[in-house]
Image 1 (tube, rainbow, N blue to C red):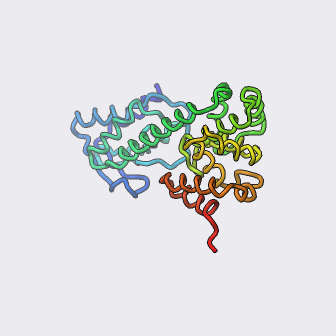
Image 2 (cartoon, rainbow, N blue to C red; image 1 turned 180 degrees about the vertical axis):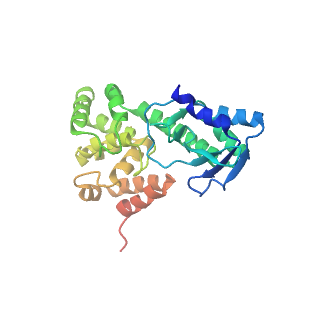
Image 3 (cartoon, one colour; image 1 turned 30 degrees about the vertical axis):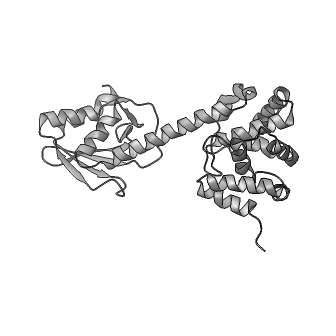
Length: 291
């Protein structure tokens, strides 16, 4: 028997389902749905249909527990929904991918448990926003580095930053294709000023231009920021770089070397950013010392 159809054999015998959030917060209370109506049973079985067993096993405990009950009210089995996409069942060695997870989320919402659908839609919005930021970030990447895009985007938050070999390749290519140090620094500042723009909690790949800036002499940064071509996006990259966590070997001395007019300019940019974390960091690093 096809393992993807094994659960449907149990669903066919179920006459009720008791549904409860694995975690109570934000998901509503327990609900019980009668499956005695054939139309309701078919709809539920359709929503619970699975497409494949890819060998994947989610590390979390899941979101919704579905306890299937027989005609005598006895427990037939239990299934756990994960992230609106997969089901976990004791008969399967891995989690199963739902054919259409949205059907089950809609079914839950219509029967009094809207939380999982709301969480799923919120996650979709976050993913769409992240995709948009990533596209904007890639669009600002120096043309000389385009061939490294996949390697950079593939960085994991567990890697602790880009490996030395990748950074060396990027530096060599930039020096070869963009020999002017001011132009090279402007390109890196604009790149670092794009994407999420955050000083912490940003995707791993966004740290790459910051690491490349970190090995440049402070004089290169000062020359680039004094260049007539320097604009708001370059200031954004400079703020993010100079007030971030341990972004330069001699960060304290380098920031102290900034001319007063540049410190005021970068501080004003941080205050306009609407990013409370960035503004707080900038106040600590760039604001004039109080007498």
